[in-house]
Amino acid sequence: MTPFKKAVGKLHLWLGLASGLVVFIVSITGAIFTFQDDIRDLTEPWRKVSVQATAPVLPSRLQAAALAGHPGIAAKDCWTTYFGPDRSATVFFTDKAGAPLLVYLNPYTGQVLYEQDLRTHFFSIIQEIHMHLLLPEAVAKWVVGGSISVFVVMLLSGLVLWWPKRKQERKQRFAIKWGARWRRVNYDLHNVLGFYVASIALVLALSGLFMIFPGLLQSIVFVVDGGKPAPQELMETKLDTLQNVTTATQPLPDIVYRTVRRLSPANEMVLIGPTGAGQAPTFCWTYKKALHYYHRDEYAFHPVSGQVLESRFHARKSAGTRFSDMNYDLHVGQILGFGGKIVAFLASLISASLPVTGTIVWWGRRNKTKKKSRKLVSA
Image (cartoon, rainbow, N blue to C red; front, side, top):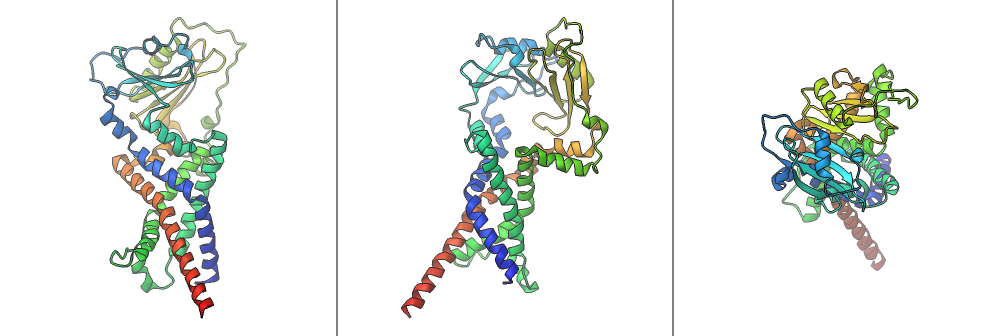
């Protein structure tokens, strides 16, 4: 082994030992979370409804039904989402005890189907572990972000170590010798599977880092746009609180819903943010396909008059902004449909195995070195 590879090997070893536990937890929870929507559709019947010929009821009616059992909670603090013709709508809010609640309703009748406390929901807990390790967010940002950054270096250094020096060695680097001793099988599992999963794991790791450190994603957007983002991407929604405006005669969520349905009629999913206290714009996002977050139109509304202050349509976005929009779908694999989810699941599962097999390799070599030293002393 060359001095360069020895140095890379040392780096790979110590970085792996330092970050292994976090990488294992984040990877295994990521694998579990990949199919969360599919599993929930099978186990939570209140997520689906029968399609009806009538139009969905307006957001104000959904909010009133969801908050009926929670006096003192204002509708202006709710998040309301329509997921599509065959899916229930939801209203999200935090109750007086601080519990995050998600209420499922029939979008055609406004009937409450189910109320879910997200503190005890399995996939909410998995997501919290995946993102924050149940640590305070300010601490988790650096623990998880630092470990995933190290994992990226590990993937690259692992490829350097895997690369065969001679052509005749390449064939054996692509296959696992299942008939060999268990230590050799473990070594091959680490090396061979690590090579096959490296490119996908790199995409998953980087897209995760973009969520933790948005500045990194903005740097990529800047590069993709050639250093010259489209003018509309630089727009910031500003609200002139001193301007005299006509107060809306209808509930603001209803105005928002009607407007975006008219401007983005082909989009299935509509997410309406809190309307606030009239001091900040009200935001709304519409998505082409339910539970997919890439293809979206964005709106900002005046919180008093309901006037559209700003709109950003997917078709007019720059290449960099489109890349930014696809980050979540890329991270969970659904950018490529169900097959992409399978790939992301397997890649996450193998990524979780790498710290385990790598530690076993290190432990075996360490014990082997100790045994050799004892024999030399005895001799």
